[in-house]
Amino acid sequence: MSKYRFDPTLFDELEQERLEALAWRKKTWLLGIPIVATASIIAAATFGPEGLIAALIGAGLTYMIAEFKLSELKEQMKTDILSHMADARGWRFDADGPAESAVSVYRDLNLLGAHNELDVEDLFEGELKGVRFELFEALARMRTKNRKSDSVRTVFSGLLARFNFPKDFKGSTVVLTDSGFFNWAAGFSQKGERVTLEDPVFEKQFQVYSSDQVEARYLLTPSFMQRLLDIRSVFPDAQIQAAFERRSLYLAIDTKSSSRDELGFFDVKDMSQPISRQSAVQLFEQELQVFEEIVDGLNLDASTRI
Image 1 (cartoon, rainbow, N blue to C red):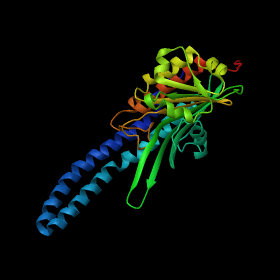
Image 2 (image 1 turned 135 degrees about the vertical axis):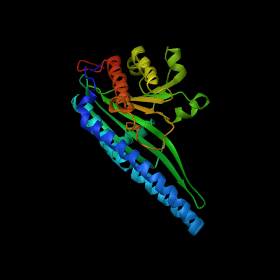
Image 3 (image 1 turned 45 degrees about the horizontal axis):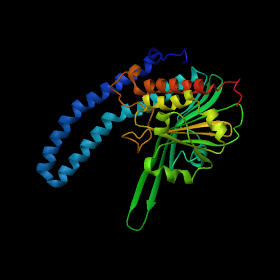
């Protein structure tokens, strides 16, 4: 694990801005609620239903004014904190994410379902123990339109990651989450044949296909299989899939969170919490540990010879 530890005192100025924004919200509500309540009574008595509608609009404006400073600060906090955490490790952080074309390889490997709408953000690029990697958030949807309706289905909401190997693979190996009765359907879209492994726990949760059976068994070591299972400790309900293709290991972690219809995995969720307790910081540190252990488990360093 990296020796770096997040120091919230580096963001004392940002923390002060957070406290000031909270004070602004409290003051706005203390002044706004009585004003809106009084205006609502007068408007309803004077103008009837139309007055009530105007009062509701006034309540909405009060809410927007009260939350303005906090919402403005949220994005700044995320960008400043995650940029610092990346810089401290010699990485690059881009809140806008990669080009959408970076996602196509995940779709081609069947790690990502078919979609016609895509959003990406929060790209991290750098090295872990000499291994180049990238990590970013993605939200993929399939929108279907006809004459009577317009429906949207989220097919993926989570994290995509890529690790570079020092040497090409001979074949293509894909690890998919077990689909139970529908495993037969997944096999039709794979390049290779089903690989049977000796780990019963792994076999119960995943299905593996490869165009090179020997290479697949070499890559899917007990250590790597355990690392994939360990990701569940950070993302308990996630659907985890992986692929070895050319010079890279690809990971797709569909978190299936309650807010999976929106981006914002690393966002500051609760502005009432101090920076030191922001879930974005804690989650990032947990993920970093898992990814470093994956590198260790695969021995993905400069001396690797596959």
